[in-house]
Image 1 (tube, rainbow, N blue to C red):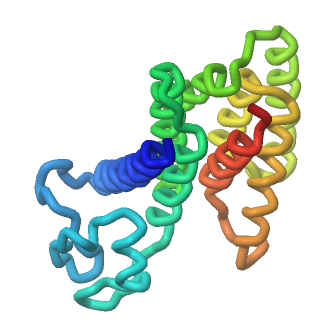
Image 2: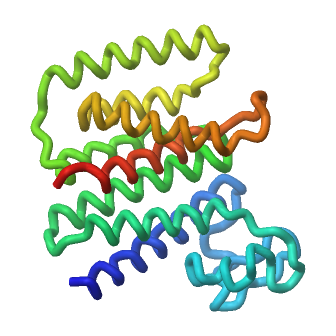
Length: 227
């Protein structure tokens, strides 16, 4: 089983690499098919095969382009590592779980990448969070809807009072998350995300794309959740 889990981790890292590349090209209005291979954003040199290996390629280059030595952002590498970890921890030979993992990881990767690169998200992708029902073996409870509405109202008031200190995309994600999980799950996710976000701030006035932190909080909470 350990071999299958390692293969699942490799798949998770490759999936993250692919989605990050697709989102970056779409946001920059670059064709998905031309150029076929990725290239350095600074010198535009087409990357060699080993530079494209998720996580490992970045580590070999020590975070700098092999050709021009320009710094390579660590966001994509970090998301590859986290998604690989998610797949390693939760993968089992169950079609339902595999499907749920694919839907959830794709949803989180797309939303995180668009928020990180462009500071907005496509709300339609939040539907993928409902796969948490399968992963957590949840049953629908009307209390979740009441809690979600209460949280939605509180976050909207907070956003108004702080002059959009929390984005609408963040609010939508937390609202959907409450519909799919529990107050405890949401609270743990938000606390982890907020803690990591605060640690990464360099200035109190710095704009922070929060969805990637919420996604990381979801992954950590999901992995640590009781089986």
